[in-house]
Image (cartoon, rainbow, N blue to C red):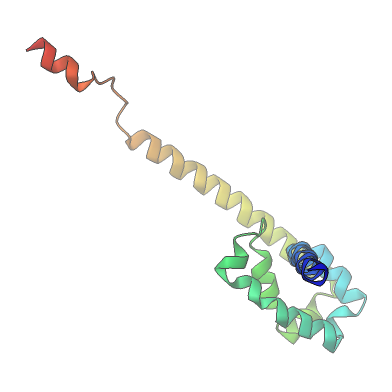
Amino acid sequence: TGGMSESVEQARNRFQSELEFIQCLANPNYLNFLAQRGFLRERSFINYLKYLLYWKEPEYAKFLKYPHCLHMLELLQYEHFRKELVNAQCTKFIDEQQLLHWQHYSRKRTRLQQALAEQQPPQQQQAPPHANAAAK
């Protein structure tokens, strides 16, 4: 049983490491760092990025705190995108687009929640059903 618990622990460590790494892909500055250091040109690293696509499956994706990392992972499958990440201007553009998306999303969500709240009728106090029977 010693070997069994060790493999469970190894699997847990691999899961945690991959979870942390894949979420780092949501950060354009980290992608720029990887590109500038040449990682995005290494076949083994590109294969690893392809392997990580299993995180798109719902049973894994539910653990992600930054689900847009999956979009970046998808884009990293393309050589042209990987090459462009060396350019700091490209990274800055992605960073700005993410920020604009989050701002738009949060404003839109707030407006939607306000509209839903305004549509709800005010909560009325209802008497328990037995009170009506006693009054008759």
